[in-house]
Amino acid sequence: MAGGEDLRRSAARTGMAKKSTVKTNSNHGAPSDAEWEKMDRATAFKDNVVSNEDNADSETFRKGDTAILLPYPTKPDDPLPLHDFWVAKIRGIRHRVVRGRPDVWVRIQWYYSPNDVKAIIKSFDASKCGKYERIFSDDFVTVSSSCFSDLVTVKEYVDSNLDQQDICANEFYMRYDLEHKARIIHPKHIGTCLCGIPYNPDRDLMHLCPRPSCRRWYHRVCLVNQGCVENNTTKRGREDRLLALSPDSDESFPLAAYKNPVPVPAHSRGKCTVTSKGRGKGKSIVHVTPLETLPEELVEIARLPIIKGAKAGGIVGNVRGVVAARRMVYAALEGRELVPEEWEELVTCMALQEMGGREEDEVPPVDIWKGIFFGCV
Ligand SMILES: [Zn+2]
Ligand SMILES: [Zn+2]
Image (cartoon, rainbow, N blue to C red):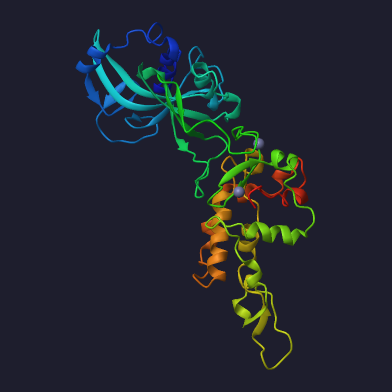
């Protein structure tokens, strides 16, 4: 027998049962509830050795951790993409000695895959989930410590959260909870778009209407098909309409009120290349609109459509960055708050960093989709 890693992987070869048959096969030797009660508690295990210390190396599995388990009947040496592993939260660790050897068992709470949910809720449309998506269940089982492959995190994804943290392309995430015996999903697996079809993060491209009374995501394709496209305005006109679409008020932000040039000291302008006209008097004063006094890149971000989808730079999209940028622009224009020095950090999100050109591979072309508007506007 080779090192610890091999021990663990070969042990995993015994695999574990599919969830539906877990009581009847390969979790052979699993303790009954009564036996579990009598077993000694531990807070961590590593290679079938338990401990109660809080040493957090990457190969130790601890109570409260989320882990991936090799799906039965996959062999440990078969290459398997990460998104095909089973995912579970570790709720309890207990051990006993069987025939002189340590016998470690782990109580887990399953994250179901979309197909697992489909198996018990026929109406659930697994094709409208992402491949790294899991559904947090109230289904607990006891499995051998040998089934565990690695630690992962499952991020919570809330569609309506304007401050949603980024979720990378190879990170697990969850949108729904499952009551497995009652066969109920919370919240309901329905979309907010005109079509009612849920968002598939791997495939769909969605636009958000950020108004508080709306906060709905729409498929770009559906908006275009419904004719929710504005053609009779300039590019800047469209961008300013997006900029005025407030996440905090159902009224559009009154941008027009900030379009008259006002005299400001040259150095306060967002763009540093401005030089004053004429010599002598008024040398350091320029006339610009209040909008032009703000950092140009910040305003450009605030003018972006709020979109999401793997094809638009990320599963959760640019919502956090664009919303933060719009709020900063409004606060500065209204004189409530100066643009913070660290504004770039505050609007940074993965989708904005990765967007360069990636979102253009799908109809309709950029000039049209920037003109997309929502039924409520
Ligand atoms: Zn739709
Ligand atoms: Zn709306």
